[in-house]
Length: 147
Image 1 (cartoon, rainbow, N blue to C red):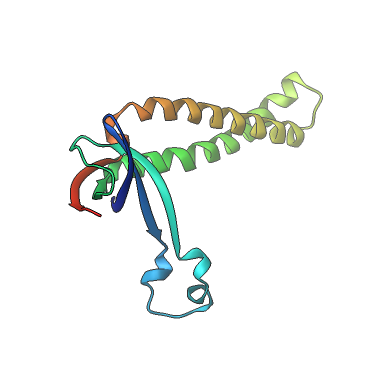
Image 2: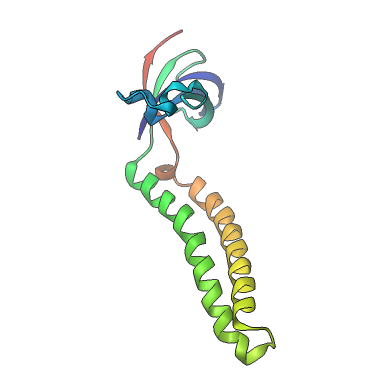
């Protein structure tokens, strides 16, 4: 994934970059009802990235993140809670008849909620681990221009 942005702040080897994100509608040639509404077209976000090349405040830069890392992290973030939700239901429903007087459906719902919450807690700690690996962090690859 490659994005372009402007550096608004630097701190040691890190930089805060403002990126203008465009929706897919901005590239669309059809002018449907969605394309006429400007509220979803452009969004500005600020991202903290590695600044190993020494770019300064005001520089226009190119930011890059590996596609494999992006796909892997997306799969983990979206699929892990979903799998936990489904697994929690079936595990709790199976064990409900052995250990509780709850119906299997009630136990399944409680189990799915519990495992989903646990999956979000695990993801929070996994985020801290992934944050230490350079492959999962965006970094500045090139200075495009100055302001």
